[in-house]
Amino acid sequence: MLGFLIRLLPFWVREPLLIVIGSVLGVRISYLAVSDHDRVAAGLGVVFLVFTAIRVHTVVRALRARRNPSPAASADEATVDAAAPAQAQAQAQAQLQAPAHAGAGPRPRPAAPEKEHNAWGQAFAAVAVFGALAASVWVVPRMMPSDDSTPQPASCSDGEHEALPKVYKKTPRPVTGEELCKALNRPDLAKLLGTPAETATTASGNNNTAPLTDGKVALPEAEISFDTYTVNVSATYNDLSIDQYVKLMKYGNERDVKILKVLGRPAVYSSDHTMQIELNLGSSGSGGPVEQGPLARTLSVALDRKDRGGYYEITVWSKSGALPDDTALLDITEKVLPTIPERPAR
Image 1 (cartoon, rainbow, N blue to C red):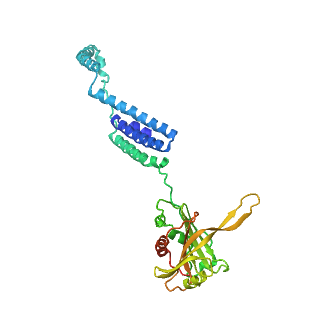
Image 2: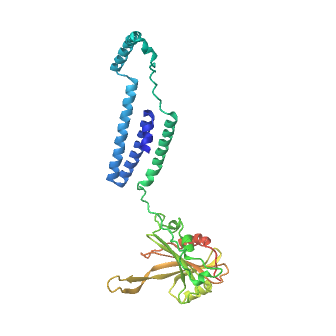
Image 3: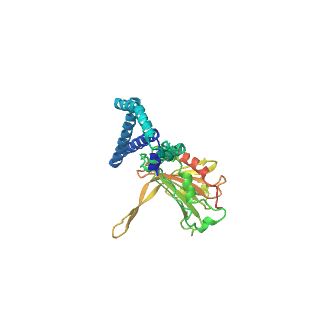
């Protein structure tokens, strides 16, 4: 259909259009071929550029012929002009010598002038070709492989179809792991960690319940991983206040305990080692012993200012054992907590 419309166009409309189409496609495909080191695309780009060069050469020849007509053509036109009076005189004599009854026959009609091309059809065809050109310029870059190799940050998985535990269906219900993941997966999270050039590699959320509670305490959490650090946020909906939690830390292995206020709520810093489990995927399928993992730093914040029970925890750790400053953990907490829906389970 496009080829038929192009053939309907006059020469001085058709050829410039073909030159524009060939040059746009040739340059675009050649650029992508060079950036992606694709030989097939390079060959296709060369074909378009050669096609464009041929059309340019055709237009240049037509312009030269139009501006400088050849001498042979001028001589032929002069000969025809000189022979025209003699031919007219011979035709007049032949008509006088013809029989009288010949006059009764039908007179020869002058030759009908050659029909000119439909101007409206040409205009419609030109508009159609221009539209096709615009569509090709818009579509081709999207059909060709993109030259942008920048890794995209991980997005939170959709957990809407996941069956929630019974405790999550109470009113008011706790936040879900999906909501925590969306709150934590901020565009500036890597910058807050002190590694602005990194991109999140994984992002996930789950709707757990606290162990040893028979599913009666909601414990949703989310986790975002980078090349350097991993950040985890959780919400525990129990009756334990931060004050009571600090007292329990004295009997545990938490280190560097530091009490403070965050967003007007009681909070506490603490450090503890993560657990490291080695899995053996061989024929026996057995796992190794649970070992002590790298140190993690946690900031626990009460669910409300009155500290009536329950708390958020934001934890940071790395495989190397390196940790960011406490100010980075505090900045993350102050940015993330206001974006979490306020839904205390009590």
